[in-house]
Amino acid sequence: MKYLSSIGLSAKDETVLKSLIDLLGARTSEEWIYRDDVMVDALLLDFDNSEAVAAWNTKPESVRRNTIAYSSEIPGISFARRLAKPLRAADLIAVLKDIEENPGKADKAPASSTPPPSTQAPSEISTLAECVARHSEGLLRLTFGDREVVLDRQRRCFSTSESGESLAALLAHPFQEFQVTRGADVNLPPDGSIKWLDQKALLWLVGQSGSHGRLIDGLEQGGLFRITRWPGFGLVRPSQTVLTLCSMLTRKNAMSIEEIRSVSGVPEFDIIAFINAASLTGILVAQSGDAAKPDKPAAKPELPTERKGLFAKIRSRLANTRA
Image 1 (cartoon, rainbow, N blue to C red):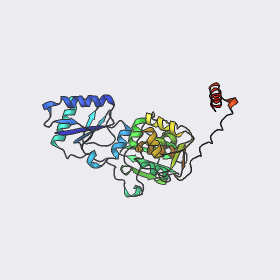
Image 2: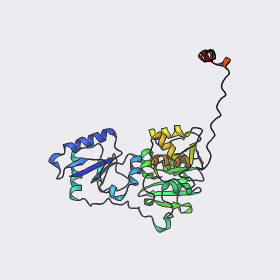
Image 3: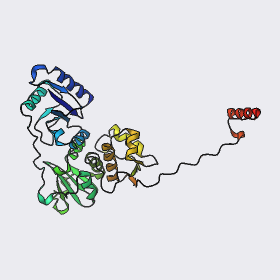
Image 4: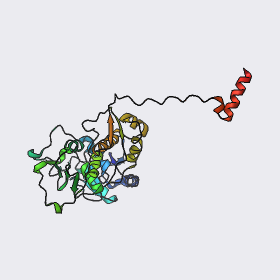
């Protein structure tokens, strides 16, 4: 018996997947069961879902083994196994049979997963969000295979051939898989051949996709946070989670990560991504966790009897009569 699970599927795709698993019967050598609560033998990842890719990247290798990339286009990272959208029974059977016969077949690493020594990022930087936060001046190029993003912090703009969800998925890859080039080492073609966009759109996506559950330097895990205004989302339509956090953190009183999680039900992983994105785009106000919260306003003095409503006057007179 073997187990299959998934990350990031839409409700429709998950229903179809479970139905196909139930109908496999004798078409596979092993009996396959869809489960979420055990160590699985195969994991179907919706690669078009940037939040799912980010969550998948944080999981240990033992969980990520035998991942099947499920996408509408060829993923930017090379997977040993892939299913094209929409789900088809024959394709699913073929990939599950391959896992049965070759359970140890590993995914191939991207061609550029190990940057050359001259461009290797400092070891203390562990996330893309941290890398961008520290690079506050000049040019920064992030290369992943044949895909790249160039950020010009001085001119406050960026350039890339990626767009929308594709860019978000690219930025969700682990920082160690990027080749990073800085400053004078970044060679650019003539200015007229590059389309530059406002950097805030990229900075927001870097925080949302490239944080991997870690706050950037200077932000305290126990700190209090709020935002001065709603962000301009730019390239990607905001999720309901992001809209919820925007609504909560535009209030006057700053909140801790634990308070945000308790009130909203949003996982800490997503809260940290939001806080980093807000910090990178300059709309975050952060306070030390030791900072005193605003005192509650003093209680209003009770109004004299003559200014109370009709029922209050009646109650007052009845009380005097009984006395």
